[in-house]
Amino acid sequence: QRMIGSNALAREYAESDRSPDFRTNGNTDPSTPEYHRHAAEGFANWKLQVGGIVKAPKAYSLADLKSLPARSQITRHDCVEGWSAIGGWTGVPLQVILDEVQLRPEARYIVFHCADSFGGLTPTPYYESIDLIDAFHPQTILAYGMNGGDLPTGHGAPIRLRVERQLGYKHAKFIMQIEAVASLDGIGRGKGGYWEDVGFYDWYGGI
Image (cartoon, rainbow, N blue to C red; front, side, top):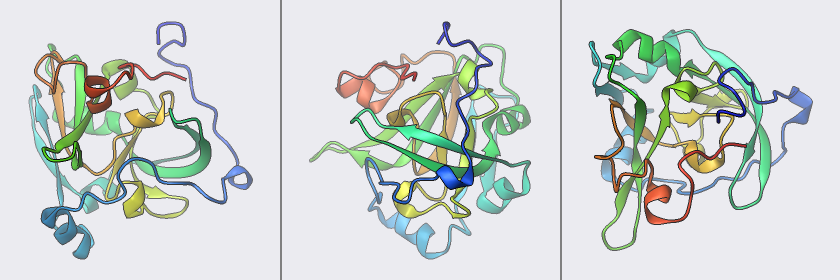
């Protein structure tokens, strides 16, 4: 991350470069009654909770997010499993949200709590985190659109994180809550993400 630099941009592509088939990765449906209810309602009553160590916690409807300044970008998604695809994403820059809720000085990380779970008999809701360098990067967005349409369920509707300089497991899907924290010690097992805690993934999945 330090070698790349805080202002380095991921490559952006032309419409003609988009992959004809962009496979889904990870979970493709949270399979919970709450999520299915929101999906059946077109996420009209869904709210993104943004809080933690902030001065002005807020809850955003999908309509609220779509009313904020938007960014569109066509980028390559690189999966740790060895495949890549190019897709178009539209959403609100995470910086816009963080500026509204006003991080407190002690905030160091942004944690994403998701609707989907992993783990068999005792499933754990998915979670991921990034630091403030990536949180305020211009290409880091909460995407609600993909390839000119609404974000499909398999790709994380209603919103997913796009943090374009990192591998796919960092791009949390089905986001329900965003939390600003001073330390990752109290998140999961303390390594900053589900796969980092249960597997051998690095916290910083830079590409």
